[in-house]
Image (cartoon, rainbow, N blue to C red):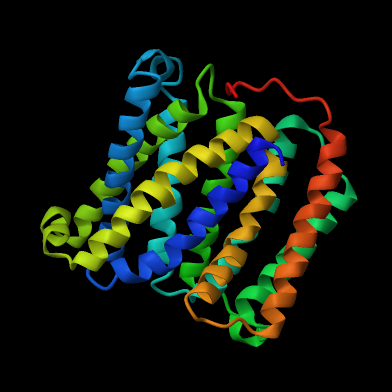
Amino acid sequence: MQRPLLLGILATAFWASNFDATRIALESLAPLTAASLRFVIAIIAIMTLLACTEGLALAPLRRNLLAFPALGILGVAGFNAALCIGLQSSSPLTGALIMATTPLSSTLLESLLTRKWPAVQTFCGMALSLFGVALVLGRGHFATIGAMLTPGDLVIFAGSLAWAAYGVGCKRFVKDASPLAISSWTMLFGTIALVLTSLTEGNPLRAAWRAAPDALLASLWMGIVGSALAYIFWTIAIAGRGVARTAILFNLVPVFAMLIGWGIGQSPAPLQILGTAITILGVALTQMRLSRLTARPSRGPIAS
């Protein structure tokens, strides 16, 4: 298995682990405060790694003085704040299904920029994968998703578009920066925006100090593994494989979430197991088609 593909799959597994960790954190912390604490931990970890490996050189920041803040606000603050705010009125099932449209949004956005439209097989693979995600999340009971959109659904959809723009932007607009530098600087600006937003919920520092030990341990896991490592691995995957071939892997997040739940004693329904197989088949179908179209590696602006 190619290294970028493996790292992209690992990133989705790390993000999937955040579901149970978030549930634990939210028992003691308000949503935006929990997100801010997670990324404060993440930025400490990722900046330490950057300093120890590549050094805190400012040259990449100067070359991307507009791109890094914009991408950080979109892909860190915007994406995570939209989920926190949207889930106040949207159901987790509906929200997860909306987020599963992100690969399609990423592919369409990339196509608009390059003016190269994917083949029918690519869209079929994405549709098949999305159907599999619906089975995994809904256990086949699609009526539970609801027919009416809530304001929260629209906020979550905006977050999915922000995440799609982050992936495309990292590939198309960042100049001469390593995946680690991109993840570090964009996360720094996104964390600043998240912390400022969390002030609307009160004093985040006091709330973190009073949080239960389990919530702090969950935040530590989400910060280091579910954020810092996940963002680095995802950026490496985009640099090595391109936006479309990486974005479809995002649909593996609910699959890994189900498998993690299975590992801690939450038995999946038969339709969820079927949905897992369909999701993986859709991802594989898309990957095979895109592999033919990108046989020669592209020379994007991100250093691999």
